[in-house]
Amino acid sequence: MKKFAMAALGGTVAGALLTTQVAGPLIAQQAEKDSSVYEQLDLFGNIFERIREQYVEPVETDKLVEAAINGMLTSLDPHSSYLSAKDFEDMQVQTRGEFGGLGIEVTQEEGFIKVISPMDGTPAAAAGIQAGDFITHVNGESVQGLALDKAVEMMRGPIGSEIIITVVREGTPEPFDVSIIRDTIKVTAVKGRVVGNTVVLRITTFNDQTTPGVTSALKKGLEELGGIDKLDGVVIDLRNNPGGLLNEAISVSDAFLEKGEIVSPAAVIRQAESATIHDRET
Image (tube, rainbow, N blue to C red; front, side, top):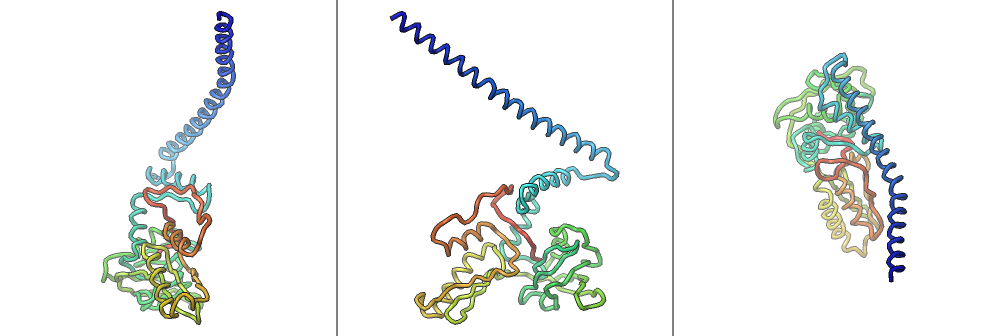
């Protein structure tokens, strides 16, 4: 009995020694890794303080931090980004599908604001704004080099107020001014039509109205054809679609897919729901 007890004790001691021998290097490796991370964070903090104290012009701390976060995310992939509280609020305004503005889809190119397309029935369309136009000034103030969000903010305003934009158009020798009266812009996310025995769904953006719009347009098309047995197929037109809510894009895809992964998780930091805005509407 004593021999058994001693053997058991020996096994326990050996087990303790083995655990120590294995865990020791692992703990050391983790400590070394943590130390390296802290050293890098210290380096970032030192550079941050030097910029604040020694840069040739005063800098805003919150902008430096935001730029650092965005730089970290964009190094992962071109679609990861950070939204501040204000940017998130602006995104919510846009993705609700109704806002005050001009009625143009815009992007940024060569430092200027480029019109992707004017929306049908909006002040911009009535004023003759065309796809491919470049907007260089808003109310006499240059937009060159401004972030897209800032330029869009300049073009939005109270309904009924006037805005003058300066336009550069291919084939027109000189820039020219266009006066537009802001109005309520309602984005029609989905337009459907029947061509032969095919339903064509034009999806202009992915906002809160997209999935219901697809459902409604498809239902109307099937009724026009006389039933699903008369349907040859569905064409989804995404040309010039500027992007929008990720969950809406997934929802639309899910309506036409029986199985399989639709989208993989991405390293996108948001203050609320997951969403991506590539271009903007104003």
